[in-house]
Length: 102
Image (cartoon, rainbow, N blue to C red; front, side, top):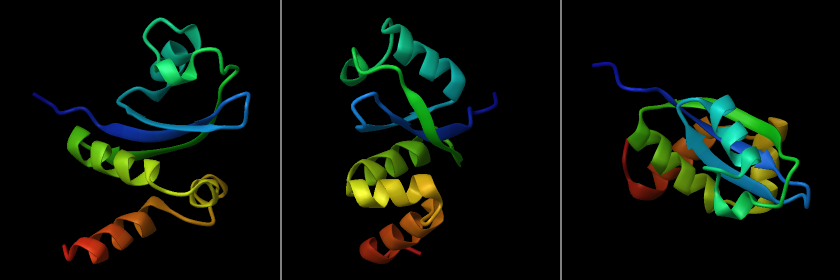
């Protein structure tokens, strides 16, 4: 059985707040968020949503770890990811250095 490949995404809400999530099918997940049926509670009433960033990150476990790391970032660091001034690879390297993993 093939394991799904997940992407990390960041959406901008109408109030200019940023929401980070992971999904195997980002387009479907954004539609769920916008419809309010199966979307995140945080996003209810905050539409329209604009997809600002998406990057394939690997399996679910890797995606969840990276999602947690991105959610811990300051708004400025998230904006740097969105604009391309920073990358998820840099975040992975910073995390590896901080935890002593290689």
